[in-house]
Image 1 (cartoon, one colour):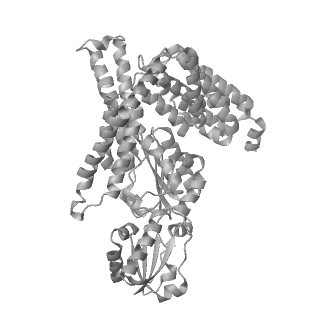
Image 2: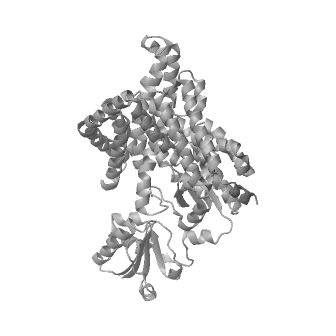
Image 3: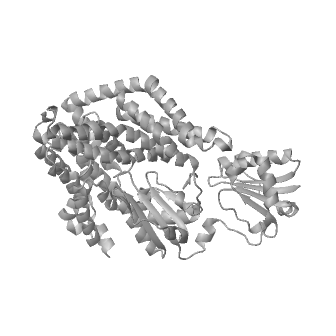
Length: 577
């Protein structure tokens, strides 16, 4: 038997290379002659020659991405999943030869077929960790740019209030392309077989046309369980860690908000009124502190693990998070537990091989049990003690630090919140503040939210102070930005930062640093991690209220005045012309 084999996977790295070696070895065992073409972006491959194609009795394609079969028309061809070929390569090859059929019409790569289409039907999903700003701004950018490019597009937003404008089965069936702009994990099984491209909400918002171009060029058919890549495997892995963390944070946030406000309401009856059993204050404290806050760390860890390993990772993650909470390891321990549980569950799922009759037991029995035991033992005997000590020391330091250290911390947090406006650095500062709420440390969260309001408020103020330096569309954006700033949505400043980053970002950081420093200096405390100034409507959610407002106003004025001064009037005239 003389056959030709092609292996291909979306990244062109792992599966493509491994399958080529496994299948070549299997042909030797079968005493077949084979020619191998490994489509890889990692190692130089040898393309099948016309002579090899002509002499082959069967062309076997092992791939989970589309392969151009134009050159195989008229030959007997079998196309199968590359992952299936790795289980029992010899049996898989024998079956492939038996089922090969004459190829009468070629299939072309997804990118080629999409590029040849002037108008494409596109469906998309946008999702960010908080489910507030980036989710909807990215959706709007995709809709506007898609319409401008002549495509039909429908975008499902998975925000803090759930999925809106949901994609129907018919929408998906008719779609030529799927775009996933998400900073957290979203379920993708319904897109099986569809050309799919993954990116972030930030890129979808700031470089929308570029992402459309890349989507048409790089989209690959999605298969359940496949990690679709929008770039190299290494960059996908790095982005994955951030995405897993943000998935945990996004599911934890509602608990933090509800719990924090319930605690604040209990203080309406007096700071220590909750200590008297049977009172409404005690009930509110039980709801907020005893229940909502108690679930924070387990949910954080559980959904980090869920993001990594899907449903089999959820139970080990929740158990690890509960252990982090009970051992005093806090939110840092919860993060460690989430990643331990997730990668343990993923390793067991991929590496532990069982007879087909027992495979059904893996997700409901074997993976949860083994991953929970591993995570639990590591948390109890290795991680819990040291991390608990670190958390205790950090909490004591934060609660007892002098004014100089407090101001310095406020400056750092303020600069981080204003540097990338909802990006990884902003989210790192935000996660730090939210995580400390579980330890009854409320000052850093107050500084984080106050500084996070400054960029959007400052841009709104700048457009008011220097109207002649901004065109009409920028002045309108300034009004919207001011409202978003009041709601603690830093992303309102993104349109300005995208056009003029070298002046906008330093102006925002200057104001944010001042606000963060003043908030810490005044000893401001915040019970809820979101809501902006509207949290003032909840008694005792913020204290002291007046000084907190002074910190926000001071930073807003610095940012607004600085950018109003730095803004080049000539640029506004040029845009208007």
